[in-house]
Length: 446
Image 1 (cartoon, helix red, strand yellow):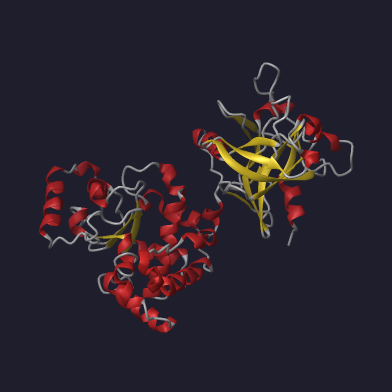
Image 2: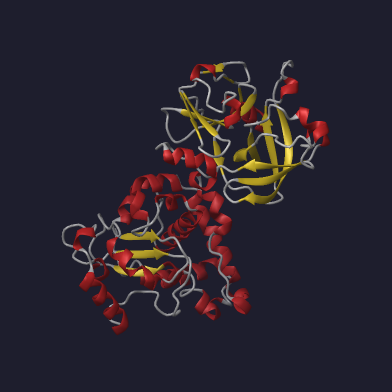
């Protein structure tokens, strides 16, 4: 397995007089070189001709540039080059976290005459400066500080990747910028967020830079089943830890968020949601919880084929925002239900529990829910329905359940029932009873 040093050298490239970083999107058709715009600008600020953009790897190998796409406003650019991916060298992205240690790896100018031309600069992440644009980083080494007396040591780093070393993995946290302040920056400078690069990508119809959690559910484990019961939290602590440990069954499977996203696309989200929401961290935390719950109810070795089968009977649909799910009835009607069988279950993934703390299921036998469904049916636009033959009105043909039924309704509100359970098998049977009522007895997906 390649060392971290090997990986840093693999991803770092020289871009004219600066640096860049290799990033492989989910394709074998091309590769990205991420860098800063000023590395490839003429004096008039226009972009150099393709033939004048020189990209070199550590062994001085020239990388042919096919296209250069610059951000309109930010000092960022993406160079499209022929595919140079390698399954042993995987790079993902994530947002920087305050006080975490970061590594900048690039081609400083002072090493250009040396045999080894790359070097590693260790920094610490500070506060966000401009949301989605820049964040503060501080050098840990006075030799490589951003002050006037030491700036010559970091010339050439512009465009380098800002990395987080996570065990054996590298995570791209941003791009190193230009040093603008001739008086120095008090050892601080603003790194550029990945978000600016994704703006270029979306505008040009390219494949986005995947966050780490899109490649593996393991990055979401610490955020799953964040159950809180106030003063009674100790009653469900054993249950909470058990559920978190059960997420490992999903993590150990071959499933990834990106694979599920590419398979189901807009069927994963409620009608009228922005496409970028499909890469929201919150959606995939809910999916990790959802798959864990299914695994408790009915043990399965989850594969993408099994998920396809389940999706035709039980569907998790997420919604952006923190309002009440009663506000989403119209969007529930117009969501994409193609492939979902009649009487199927639709789980609505929304961040807040029901406002009334009662309506976790849209039970049509309850008068005020029946009236809300009836009012929505009177005014709905049939032309917007996304349903199969045999389905007439989604709110009547499917059973809708709030995602918090599986957490707040089934566990937190019943915390006293869990207080004395300290055995995995006993707890598993308790959860099967809670979840089987909601899923297996209501919906057969064998």
